[in-house]
Image (cartoon, rainbow, N blue to C red; front, side):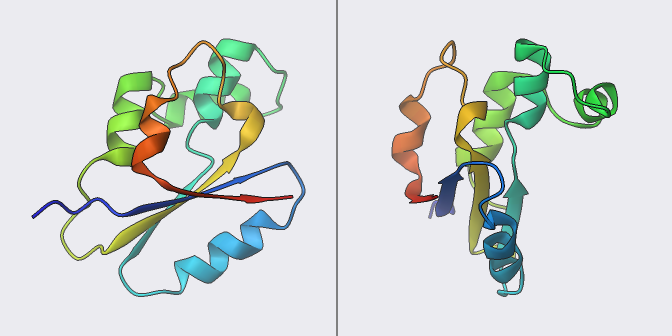
Length: 108
């Protein structure tokens, strides 16, 4: 049996999306991914963020590895994942085929 139910929230900055993530965080069996594409965005875009280097060093920056983690089987004891994305972090140079494996919804 595959264990890969993933819910993805796509939003713009400052939209109260963190509140939604915190609500999902309270559910048993939920794994949260909070802006999992941000380190890649910082690395590829060159955006000047005060903690840029620390974020890049502490997060996965291999695109294929990130996508596998976001779409693959979940760890034991986890029923589903909730993934919060800022839409502009989905850079155009990367494939978007993986989005078909998520249950996507949008917040603005």
